[in-house]
Length: 109
Image (tube, rainbow, N blue to C red; front, side, top):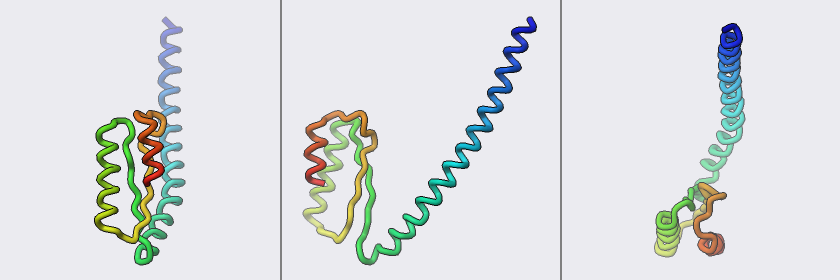
């Protein structure tokens, strides 16, 4: 019975340590990301009168939604030409559903 109690004690200690490590890592990464993205957001706001910067996400894990969003963006860009810099990123770059569509999209956008 003592080995079971020892095992439980080790599990409890490990769980408490891992929880503290998670809290420390979460705080560390939030400080790093905040220090990077707040100046970036301020820079985007300062240069907005010159060039409007828009950042968007394109889903590529489903075919229908991603094709519709990209086509809608391209149609709006033709109808209403604005002085903008549009930056897109793929939501899931490892799970490409349609590789040919991805190549065509990179050429257009």
